[in-house]
Length: 309
Image (cartoon, rainbow, N blue to C red; front, side, top):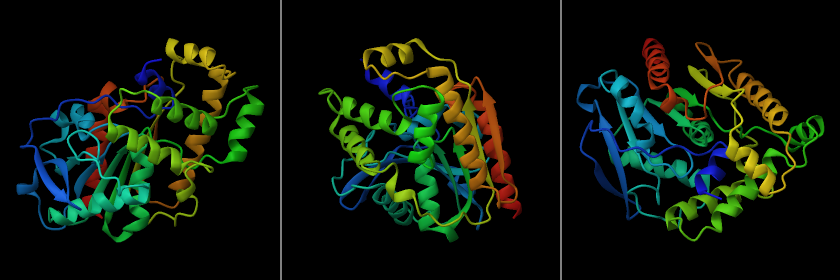
């Protein structure tokens, strides 16, 4: 089965695009490993204005956000980058946990003298990453913007209840492990992507997102969360369900998981003023690629709220 099919099914995959020509691509050494990045608007950034920091999905380079740039590059300063082992950034075997990913991003920003405050943007698994970053550096965060984020808050009890309610044999947490292990069997994937897959498999073994279970509450910052739900069941999902004998009642299964994800993220921001949850029925996981103008307008609105605080 194709790699893209596997990744889309677990809602982690983003399409890698060419970096937007908003500035020259650059490399910098962080922990003796080269990291690739692009910045825009820094020359116009005023003191204490937020800079927008983009975190992409699993296995995706910073260029996966490229569809947004025609709509945002004149609105604020920002940086996109490739995690170690992804895109043009060198693999670093010392990055073993998501906490290491966050530390490396912080080291990158510090080395480039890109000072806070930061408005963090995370797509898919980039959503958990920016939540973890905020827990480590809360005083540096101006706001958060989630694009169809992975539900790192799903508990084993909730997952089991979904299986029971939908008469399905496989839960989301189990499916994640199955898919990551299957992708790792593919000899054609890059060493960097393989390292990232192993890291995320370890993060959820034996417990789902085990290093995220005791995060402190969010600081009272503006948060925008865009969630696609009631997605169309694609042919590849049906084929995968049959070939791997997953026994999933796909329509009801996804509906139940969508409801839980919406509940979890709504609960996460319940004490945050100037925050909102944007629900997008029938949208795809790649909201920013399907409708970049919609996402860009919401991001610009969130940025303006951050400035006014």
